[in-house]
Image 1 (cartoon, rainbow, N blue to C red):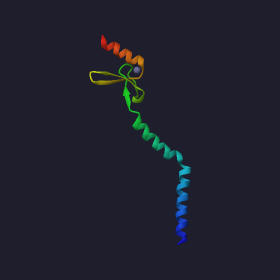
Image 2: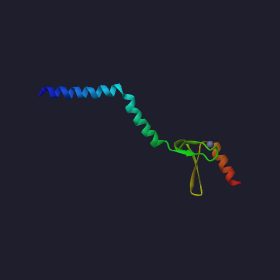
Image 3: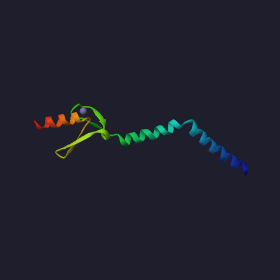
Image 4: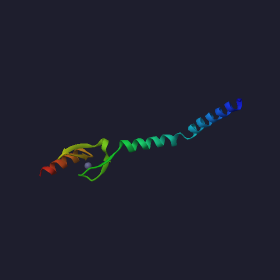
Length: 83
Ligand SMILES: [Zn+2]
């Protein structure tokens, strides 16, 4: 019966050794998942560039939310829409 305990111990050592040898592969999968969930890309209508929604400046126009990469772009858009 004791050999089963040794086999379980070896198996646990194998899991620990594998986790220590390949830590990057495991953490990389978690990172790409969180990046995809957190960073939605939006288009700036003024300079036509894509950037993360998290860092966007927003204004509402006709019930629609418009995203800008910077304050300059937002001011330019508001100025142009008034003319
Ligand atoms: Zn812009």
